[in-house]
Amino acid sequence: MSLLLDNEFKPLPPDKCVDTEAFLEAVSHLPSFFDCLGSSVFAIIKADITGNITKIKTAYLKDPQKFVTLQDLLISEREAQADKWPLVGATLALMWLKRGLRFIQILLQSLADGERDANNPNSIRVNVVKAYEQALKRYHGWLTQKLFSMALLAAPCRSNFLKALSKGEDVGEEDCLAKVRQFLENFTPTVDAIYEMYTKLNAELSYTV
Ligand code: 03F
Image (cartoon, rainbow, N blue to C red; front, top):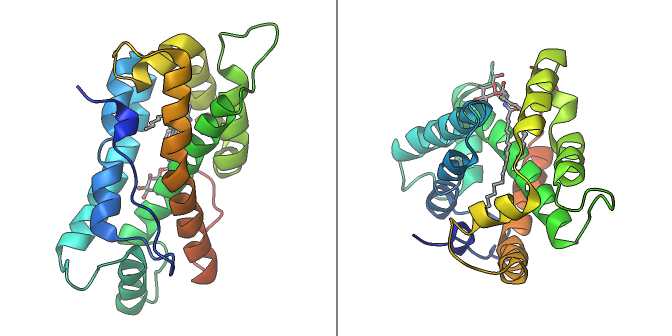
C-alpha cells in the first residue's frame, strides 16, 4: 500500500491549463481515503466526490483528443448547451469537485502550518472548521451545514488522521507533514488554476444546496 500523498499532482504548465487525463488520474486516488475514516457520513462525501469525478471522466472519454485540458471540456459544453451552461455536465461537476479540493487544500495547509487548538492539540477541529468556512459553507443551506456538523463530530483525531494519510504505514508525524507540504506544491497551484478558469469563463455559480 502506498502513501496517499505519493499520488502527486503534475506540475502546472506555464499556460496554467490543467491536463484532463493527468488530473483525473490524480483525483482518482482521493475517494479511497474516506474508507479509513469509519463513519457513514464519510460515505456521503465519498459518493459526492466519486460522482463528480465520474461525470468529468464520462465527458472526457467522449473525445479524449479534443478535451486535452479541463478548459477544452468547459468551452465545448458552453458551445453545445449555451442555454443551460454552466449548470451542465462536467462544468457543474468540476465546479463542485474543485470546492472539495479547496477544502482538502486548506485543511492540509493548516495542518502543515501547525495551526492547533492549544487546549486540544490532538484535535483537527480548528483546521476542519477553517477549511469548511473558506471553501464550502457559503454554498450550503442549513441542512447540509448540519451534515457538516455530524462529519465534524465523526472526524478523527490528529494522529489518526495523519496515520490515515499514510495508509497505516509506519511513518512519523514529521515525515508525514513533510509529505503533506510536498503534495501541496503541485496540488495548490492546480486548484488555484481551476478557480481562475471558472472566474475567467464566468462559470462560477453561488446557489446553495
Ligand atoms: C452539492 C454538495 N456537494 C452535496 O449536496 C453535499 C454533500 C455532503 C457535504 C457534507 C459536508 C461535509 C464537509 C466535510 C467535513 C469533513 C470532515 C473532515 C474530516 C477529516 C453537488 O453536490 C454535486 O456534487 C454535483 O455533482 C451536482 O450536480 O446542485 C450538484 C447539483 O450538487 C458538496 O458540497 C461538495 C462536498 C465536498 C466535501 C469534501 C470534503 C472533503 C473531506 C475530507 C477530506 C480529507 C482529506 C483527504 C486528503 C487526501 C490527501 C491526499
